[in-house]
Length: 118
Length: 118
DNA sequence: TCGTGGTTACAAAAAGGTGCGTAATTTACT
DNA sequence: AGTAAATTACGCACCTTTTTGTAACCACGA
Image (cartoon, rainbow over all chains, first blue to last red):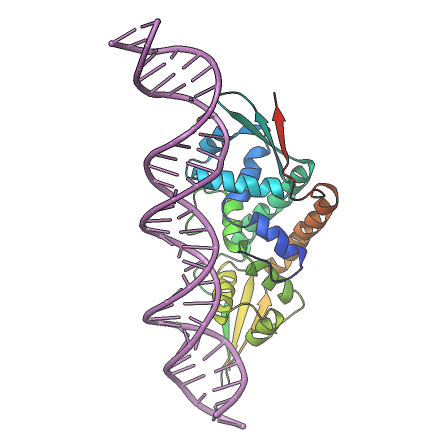
């Protein structure tokens, strides 16, 4: 998703939140300060390249802060910004919506919702 | 984003909503019934292959319905399901969140939110 | 011949994984 | 005493996988 095709805020948010990781990372950071290695432990399938990339993206978007402690071994801490905290309930709502739909509308998942007329 | 790495509903929703198109399509369908060609007109940069693909995904997820009218030229209409309608305000909220953060937290966009300690 | 809503095959682009290198200090052997 | 890891959070280069675009084709009726 390289560049925007509209000036719509919706598209802009999705550029930040799209993909498997952003929402999950926000979810883990919800519990408080996390270090790089903590986040890797939280989800072991993310590569370090992806993790740095996604964290950078969230940082640029103003969702997380990065605090670097000098010295060796290097230590870096990540936290949600106030904006990031405000985002959490919105993401929760999406999760709840999904669970809700599963019961009522996605029952016959696999069966397409197509109707033929005439 | 081929397969899930957790059983988390959050990750499942994002699998459906990720990318540039899903939320935008939902947004256009919010106004009511749309035909395939209407949606192409609404955003001219999507390829017809992507459009069919994304619509299928939303259909499988129970967000849109597809109504096919026999005869030629073929006519197909897309609508939001009740679940799709319930999703709209959540997407709106994300857009509003984004606009809100822009003013308070993303002011110095470009300047990273990194702090150096020691 | 055009228009509708697709499908399929091939090609280009983007995303993602792997492994190596780096820094300064501590701990672990020899 | 001297050397060898190990530690942390990456950056970089290379390569594979996934996604997306392009173009061609199909059906049929006006």
